Amino acid sequence: MSTRKNSKNVILLVLLVVVVGMAVGYAALSQALVINGTANITAEWKILFTDIKEGKMDGAESKTSPSYTSTTATFDVNLLYPGASAQYIVTVANQGSINAKLTGVDGIDSANKVAPTDITYSINAKEDDPLASGSTKDYIVTVTWNADSTTMPETKTKTATITLNYEQAE
Image (cartoon, rainbow, N blue to C red; front, side):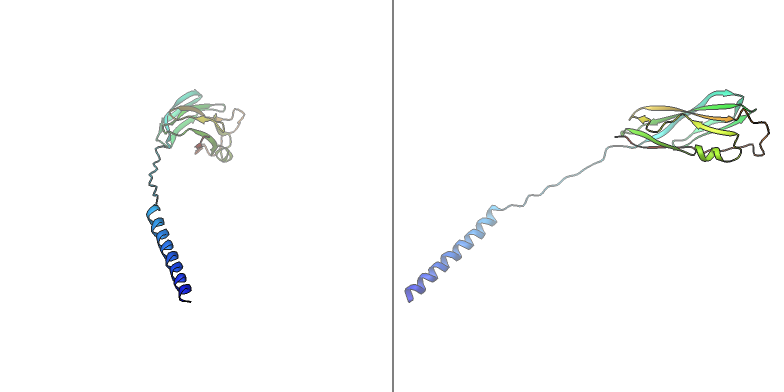
């Protein structure tokens, strides 16, 4: 029986040495891999007004010189008689590094619905107009006094805020 007990002890000892050897071997051969990285965005979104000037003036005169900032273009015009109109050329530039497209124009419909309705605004901008990085686009804003108007409107001033909405082009 003692031989049997000794052989069990030897087997247990061998198994213990094998398990310890495997653990040491695994620890020696295993290694943690670490990935370090930094991501930087170098793209720039920069769409802005760069100019506004008078266009064709038909029975109209600017009360003040048109002006602009990076996000607004402003003009003040006198329409002298029914049928008079004034055009202003507004330049939009994409000075960023991302191509853009016009997704819509806000403010025209709402401005044209308020009194005096005989004075209307329009712009020649079209949805999906592209504006590539580094390029410019001229839009013509027209304000008109309806030629069919036969009475002097009570309100003689009309202000419009027109917004050009851009998003990244695909």
